[in-house]
Length: 152
Image 1 (cartoon, one colour):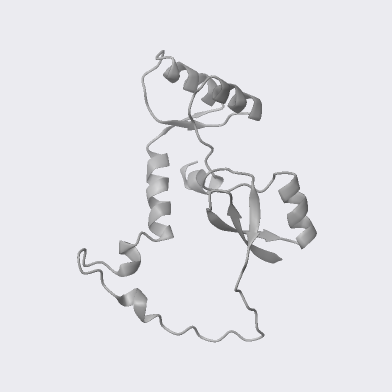
Image 2 (tube, rainbow, N blue to C red; image 1 turned 60 degrees about the horizontal axis):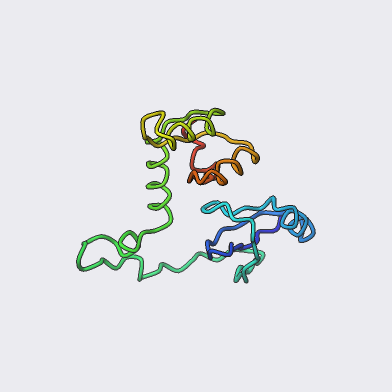
């Protein structure tokens, strides 16, 4: 497997695993690779500094991680909002929504046209249903599976 550092046009970084460079190219051209944050399909490889050697050396302890932010008295890593904290927050937001399943498009319309109470919902929509919602001016966003995986 080859691990590539990837980036979307909105500069969201993530990684992808591929069996070969040709596999990556094929998936990218077919728009099968999408940003897990914004669902953008305009993906590019980012230069990677990963070096693989026969035997891994023990990493040196990074003294900067242990620094404490003077104002918050939290480790600097937490004060800067690490990826794990962002992921936890996003999962909490998703957990606070109602799963309407395959009725997502219908329920989103009802909420938009004030035929149902305003609330956060999540569910599935076909590509055609999603396009119709966009054309009607109904705002929604695609969620990557890793945000909803633990909620099913």
